[in-house]
Image 1 (cartoon, rainbow, N blue to C red):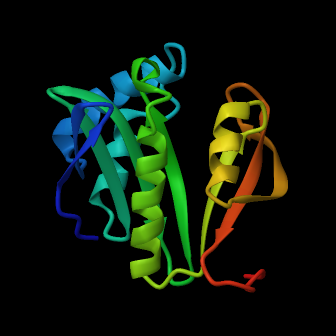
Image 2: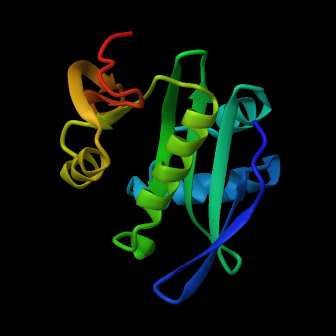
Length: 167
């Protein structure tokens, strides 16, 4: 997937959104540590592997030289699946996550996807509200989805075609 870098002003701060590169992996791991209380759900090897695949996109958001957020997605013929979304806690509540989701939703439309899907931790009330505000609907629960914590996830779907409700 091709993506041209863009700048956005949010709350009088300039943010740059660009495709992630192999050089971003150490910063991505640090971002995960900040978001997930010292843990890294994805290893560096997982990020390196994902960045090499042609039907994936990983976008990073920088404020000056600081990585403040990222989003990842896989594009399939009918579906775009969001694999990862993280915003540094110091930058949360500033609509960066919303911006990232809207960018991927637009890319999904350009890719002729019928839907966008994701999983969210069943206990992550803030993220669930964000996804619902953009039109995502809960579909089913994935038991023990997060293996390290044995926590369930909710599968959520945003239908991009009006009236379409089946895969």
